[in-house]
Image (cartoon, rainbow, N blue to C red):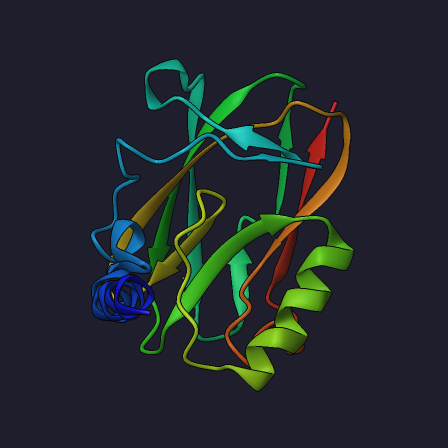
Length: 162
C-alpha cells in the first residue's frame, strides 16, 4: 500500500509540468529539434535539413489562407512559414479533410486546446511559426484553421501531392 501511494503521488506531481509543456514548440515559432517522427495518412514529420523549398502561408482575419492551394511532389519535404497577419489567434493544421472536420468539432468542445503535433502551428497575432513536413503519399490533402468558427467560415486550403 505504501509503494502504491508513493507512485500515485509522484504521478500526480508530474502532471502540472507535463500540462504546461503542451504546445511549447509552436509557441516559440520553430519546430522542436527533439520532435518525434510522426507518420500519418498525409505524410510524416520532415527533417528541416532536407526541406526542398519554403512555402510562405499568410493567415488573416478574413478567415483565409494565402495561398489557399499548394502543389508538392510525392516525397518532397516542405518548410511552411506560417504568418498570422490578423488580430486574433489562427492556426494551420495539415490533414485529411475528414480529420480536419472531426478535429474542428473537437475544438468547439475544447476551445482552449493547444497543439504540439508537428503538422500543426498555433500562431499568435503578428507572429510566425514553421511546419516542416514530408508528403509521402500522393493525393489531395488539406490544411485548416481549427480555432472554433474559423474552419466553418472557410479557413481551409488544399495540398495536392503528385
